[in-house]
Length: 179
Ligand SMILES: *[C@@H]1O[C@H](CO)[C@@H](O)[C@H](O)[C@H]1NC(C)=O
Image 1: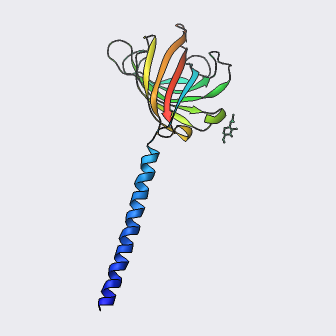
Image 2: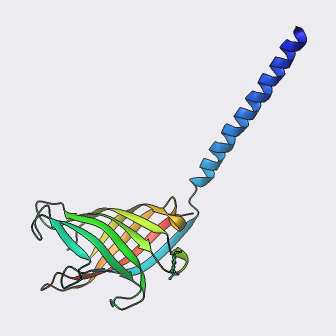
Image 3: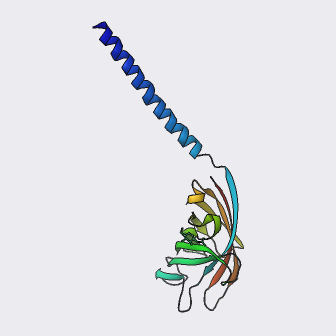
């Protein structure tokens, strides 16, 4: 009887140790996963083409340049400011005129990279873009692939704006902390 009791105690202790080890291992993994260990600086140009036969930005709701105007984008990202410059990815998502006075867009978009070591990785941006300011800061809220656990910020600067068509080229400098 007492042998059985002792055996049960030993088995229970082994079980407890094993279970505990498993839990502590998991939390260690999480701790190391949360440690961002690199800062990358990305530089590229964003082409918002609203005019012509093949626009990459289309208004899906609201009146142009009025509160509520909502645009869906699949804008090319290139290495240099010219549209025929080497393509590095696409900016996919949505922006909405989100102020009743002045000029501000609520932007929710993902930079999907298609070139070099970042091919297949992405960075998500969410924030307020007061697009008449010379330089706007937008938060990086996450990422995938090479940019897992990403956080950081993007600086957007309008390089070219064609009043007649509404087409714009915006220079982006993204500073991102990631694995
Ligand atoms: C990017 O990755 C995709 C999928 O793996 C591949 O098909 C494509 O050729 C790659 N592009 C470049 C430019 O390396």
